[in-house]
Length: 635
Image 1 (cartoon, rainbow, N blue to C red):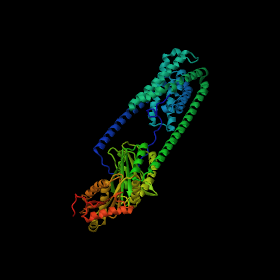
Image 2: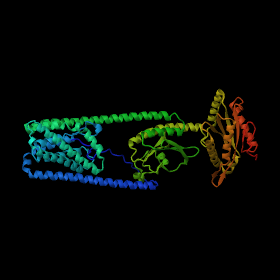
Image 3: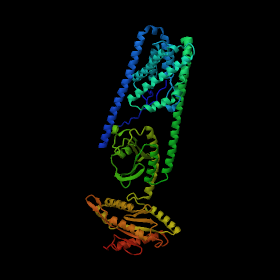
Image 4: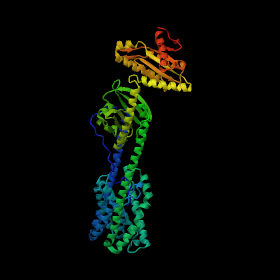
């Protein structure tokens, strides 16, 4: 008799175990109103599922109890006949039990297994007098459940499965007994006639209708969708079950002609063949699983190779993170990603980036503390949370929650040459979104990302001033030389701004160098925010800055310089109880008008304009045409 898919109530394969996240400690995660409502809804669903499970369990036990009562009553009424025919009852019960144990699958995609128990039970109904088939059905069901339980293929309590399947087989046997009475005129299997063929076909239909009815009721009580399973069952029914009719007819004719000992050799051969098919089916499944794993691994390697190739092309941490997030979202349920990079200089802090639905956003720099990033960095261990609502009291640190509906979290440290340089984290609103296998793939990705991010960070440390986040002088000179060569070739123009903070030494003398560094950081932010993507700002030295503006004439450069001057003049930085304020002076030189033939000479032109701005009162913008900004008074 064919069985329903593994997801149905009659499924007998044990589901894979879910890894449990086990750590100790507490976590302070604020529970929102939405989260509370979600918890209430979850509890309601759990209660509803529990009610459905109780109804199904009661149905299974009632079905089993009815089977026991029917068999016991009929056996007691005909105990002398049962005692006389005990050998056939035992033999048929053995064949039915082992036939169920040796069930095999022909259509793996249909998730349906074939068992010859129907053929043996139908044969028993055809050749054994009432009530022996009932005893055969009961004995075969008990033996089959026992064998399956020993093989650990039962995913429900043994008594529940035993009750359901015993009740099902006994019910089909009862249907067969009533049918034998209705077709008594054709119930002679000593010779092959159209009557015996009709009887077997009718028996086949009655058995399947009874079996399907029992399964449908069970699925309804358990709250499972009926039609998907039933449509699959009916779709494959002809291929799976029709062969039992000629098999039943042949076995019944053989039993009627040669008795039990003539029946046993052929029945045993058929049973052994089904056992061989089961072994072949297991080998096919193992081969299919191995092939799937190989294909998955090949796909992972291709993706990892693509990720490694792409992320190594950029030396910008934000771009590297954007590329990593794009690939991670292709292979994982990861709508939210979080990157935290340990920033050593000028002080211990973290640079953070967040990717939501593919959009990368930098977050404000955060001081080194004792939070989520610090825990992963110091422990150098990954963190896997299957369900935040369930595991929140067992997590050793407070994770960074990127959305209110986050349920699953997976994070791994970024390790380069044995040193943790940051943390990469993915989050999903779906509970159980990440497994140990996902963590393995994610760890491999983070290893590649760590190399790319460290390269990007080293490049930035070699080209970017770590205090102001502006380019260093060497990088600026290289870009300036490239721009001069390009402008000379194509006849284009560019300008250079030379900037210097006014009276900055007084800030250092009055408030200290740490306060001065803090102010320089804010000035660097102002310059970066004012620049265009193609502009090259650098920290020229101390409180001096230099900016290369490609494809920009004097008028355009003057407007940009004025925006910087205005913003710096309004800039206030609080340090302790004091407030830092100052102004900035700007000198501008343009190519090719101010180019004397060397890069150094060109920069001296801009520096001369800056010197003039200082001499004429500071806090102003002056070009090499020696004209100060008329909107400013000399102080």
